[in-house]
Structures are given as C-alpha cells and as structure tokens.
Length: 200
Image (cartoon, one colour):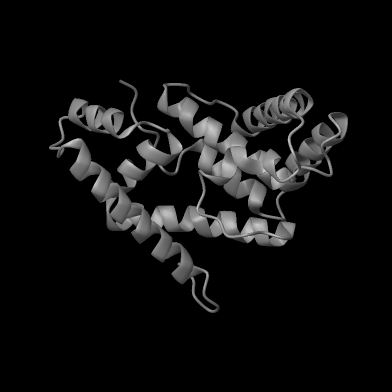
C-alpha cells in the first residue's frame, strides 16, 4: 500500500512556484497552458488556472498510487496538455454547454465563484493554506480529507486504508460523520482566511 505523499512534497512546492507571479515558472507554465488551449480552440472556454488545478489533483492521485514525480514542472505541463486534449474530445463528442465544461473540477474544491485570474490565484492559495493549517491542527483529520476528496476514495476504501495503516477506525457511518465535520472545519478555516486583514 503506497504511503500518502507528504504535504510539502515536490508537487506542492512546484504549484507554489507557479502561483508566485515573480517566478519564471509562473510565466512558462501559463504560457504553455494558453498555447494548449489555443491549439484545441478552448481558449475562450477554459481558464489556465482551471487546467492547472486539474493537473495538480491528478498528480496527487498519482502519488497516492505510488508514482514518484521526478520533475514536477515538466509533469504538470504534460498533464495539463492531456487535460486540455481530453476536454476538447468531450466537447466535440457531447456538445457540452460552456458552463458545463467546467464541472469536472468544481465538485472537488471548496471555491466560491471566480471572475478574474487574480481571484482564482488567491482562492487556490487560500485553499492550500487552509489545508496546511488543518494538517497542523488535526493531522489524522487532514489525512481523511486527502483520502476522501483528493484521492476520491469511497468511505469504505478510506476505512480500509486507515486500518491497513494500523490505526483505530470507527465504522463507515461514524467515519462519514467525522468527514462531514472535517469539511465544515476546513470551510471555516478557509472563509476566516478570506476575511480582509486575516492571514493564515
């Protein structure tokens, strides 16, 4: 059973580099994603931040399955290309409405409505900081959130994984109730950090 990646692994660090507007990685990554979107005629439909978010989530799931990402920046660009290509195929095959083309990632993140790229960047930064604060307050609870939301495991699979790690785990219904409380706690941390003048 592969171990859950450390919260400060190479993929997290790479995303922080990209979100830093003064970093060369920010320019090169978003330029590459914009090029992919133009190539597949999706530039007016999908924002680069949305593609980056999905690439990051795929990376976390891949790490959970045991993949070791040696060059995270190159991996994110390659995965971003695959994300754009897949959405191009979906739009062509299903004629999705513009609003529906973003559904693939919205259910995975605790985001409010975004309008401009600067707001997108702020929301992603706040969410990552909220997750990190939850890890500091409740490491076991943060692991449950990682398994359930980022790794997309069912509650039965989450319980099985934790049992395999030698941890005391309640039944599935109790675990699900704890997960609900954890999501509320994460949501509270996120919104508190979003208040003017508040930093995590």
